[in-house]
Length: 310
Image (cartoon, rainbow, N blue to C red; front, side):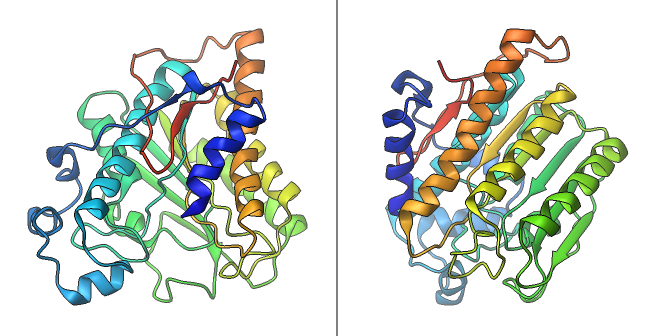
């Protein structure tokens, strides 16, 4: 949990962002959560009536603070998604809660922030076709299940084949990696599959889950990517999408290295890559960027930011 505050501090201390680019998130509306999650599950979270089994699968006990944080984490991703249509690139400095299903949470995820934000974009007429690029080391099983029968949302997951969740769901495209895969194998696979997916699905907007847990020092990751390789991963995803003029909302997702500073560095590099790309886009101009309004926001435990830093 310490990574969230330290990430915000690092981005300001290194002048990747100025404080005015970090905006507190609103809590997601209960009605917005209901676009994805069942009424029974939302009511149980709100009222504190989750069963012990559901709390065990989530990974921490119910509390009013847990509810508030979960709603704000979703609210930040919704706000970042809206802002991306005006700014081109935006990010939630938390989020990426991709293990939450429609009727339950698991794996430290209560509500599925990207799924809710995608449904909000479609409901509000901001996007018809959406791509989720999930580069967390753990498969986005909740997201895959939620959108299994929804052709408007394409789910693309690159994850460890032998890692949690041990019962995988079927994404639209799953790239399952053996233990020990590093930069040299990962990055060409990402480039090839991302180009194919962008061409095949023709999205109007992209959500990018930039997990820090493929890192070689992660205690739960089982892959062997370097910090430099993860920065290259970010540049590939963000660069490909922005070259097509697509708005991109990024969420930080997982990171479990014993060295918290390494996690913060990986996440900070993601935002720095987005900020650098936004500055280049701003200088040269990009007529494909669609401006439809919005603001960006952040949860109190982290932050979200418009990524075109001063």
